[in-house]
Amino acid sequence: MSILKIIEYGNPILREKSKEVTKVSKKIKTLITDMLETMYSANGVGLAAPQVGQNLRIFVIDVSDPEGPIDPQIFVNPKIIKVSGAINSYEGCLSFPKAYTNVRRYSDVMVKALDINGRPFIKEAHNGELLARAIQHEFDHLDGKLFIDHCRNRFETNNVLAKYNLPPVEADKLLNEEELEKSIIEYEKNHPEEAEKLRKEIEDSENQNG
Ligand code: NI
Image (cartoon, rainbow, N blue to C red; front, side):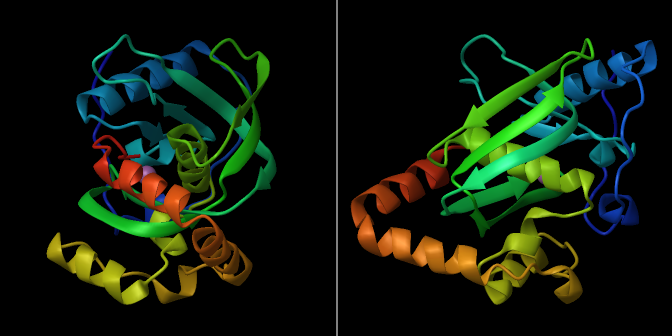
């Protein structure tokens, strides 16, 4: 096993569309094991193959309590088959050291993928839980999308990026998410207590790097 170098924002590899894995070979298994080791050593909750310089459709996630036993989840050739709901998510990324910002996400997601043995499985995550946000964040990496493309406030995000010496938001990459934004505002208006509780939980949790 080895710890791989994590590519930082500004490197064009992060903007490439990754290719499907044709076979979960021994080489792919080694890459997955190395990705897990790299993610744990960086205290991340998720890592996608392009972040270690491999444009392959693979990501790993571990949303378990850092004090407890590990719970690695491996997604090869993932497909998001259902999304619903809308939430604000305060996110960071291992390719953006220390930079966090508010982004738009779905609250519920269903994903289909292959495990490390090449066997298909389906995973669901709900109510804006960390797993739901992590799956969307990591899946995006495979399509060359980054969390800042979902930012709710471009100027606020640029200030954060500048503070950590990272390049600014790429205007042509910003996603048009008017409907999602409307739904987030609506949700926060109708459920002020839940929205505040979720916002606090998200901002308090320390391990959100993907
Ligand atoms: Ni990331």
